[in-house]
Image 1 (tube, one colour):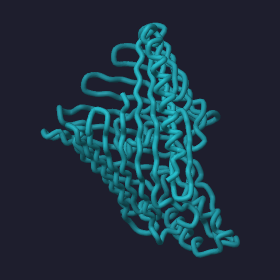
Image 2 (tube, rainbow, N blue to C red):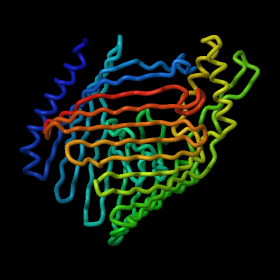
Image 3 (tube, rainbow, N blue to C red):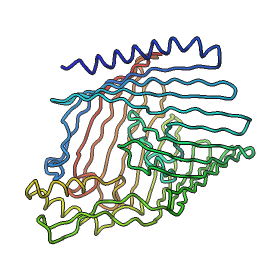
Image 4 (cartoon, rainbow, N blue to C red):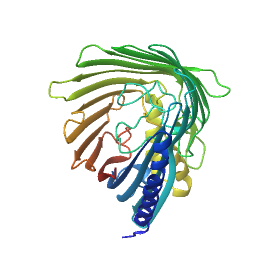
Length: 409
């Protein structure tokens, strides 16, 4: 076993501990300082469909070992607040070791007067009540609630917030950059109007990329009773382009092209009900108007199957383009989640997603157990089923993550 990345984790962790220890007395004198150190170590197994044509160009390791160091530092006084979340990860796969560092979040907020705030830096700006997909958020439509162990990576954002009146607030948002691995817009301007009272909340968001017409998004939620929550999200905007294949007079017989960008509706309706034993059931239906229609999806499946049997040099580039679609892939979905909402030392969730267009399904199970205030063990399982050319049946059949999280303080 290669111990180099593990040594890097340990050495970097020691540096963070010493730095936090040195900053704590200084921060305590000037304001409120808080810190947290989280260390994750886990093993991941991945099972791909043996018949999948994409295994030629997108192979996944059967297993990997990973460790992540996640220090969180925060400071605030009467007018200023700051947060810093650097990250270090080491991953070992058969024959390869990869170490990476990044800044997940790091921002500074100034509140000159009550009701006004200015903030700049990298952050994961999340909103919306939905559990499976958040179409009302043009920056982060996928909030990673299916696997909360994987953090949402922040974007570089400037924003100003004004509390107009009790229950009313307006926020100006300027996304000025993104990570190279991110697929969202690089620049985005948005205005967000929020309203809330004791039993309900709603927001309207207008957003635009430079040189484009604005898109419109919004969400609303209502606490109908002590046990029932009703909510919805809606958007009208152009989606990310998908790669589709068409028959053509080429060496492979096919040519790949991006779907044209067009505006369409993205909508979600959902509800949650909390039982007396503290279990909570979420049910959601959503429509992705930007997804592939039946004809495009059929051509994608046919092209992938035929390209898989051709010369690698000719077909691999097109296969690589066809697997790189954003999610969700199709248009109509249903989701269900049942969990105990962190009751006691053991919490669990079961999530089921069904693609209503091709009938494929994804099952996710999560189990966490707190052995002490500082040590947590957890397991996440995912299984997919469906036809060979369906969204959940075309490449990865399942995966599992088994790990421990240590909270140093």
